[in-house]
Length: 43
Image (cartoon, rainbow, N blue to C red):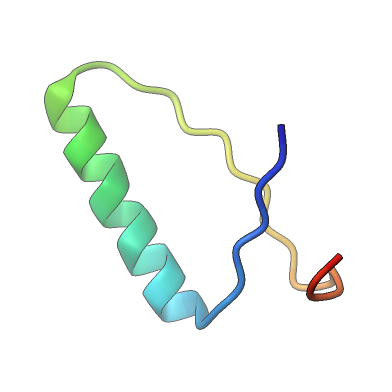
């Protein structure tokens, strides 16, 4: 399974934090995240 997300890093990490906090309020969760700034866009 793979998902690529592009955009402004400050916005991306802020939204990721919001999503994590929302999910954590509902129960135990695990977040695995690989971040790279070297992947070509659209591939």
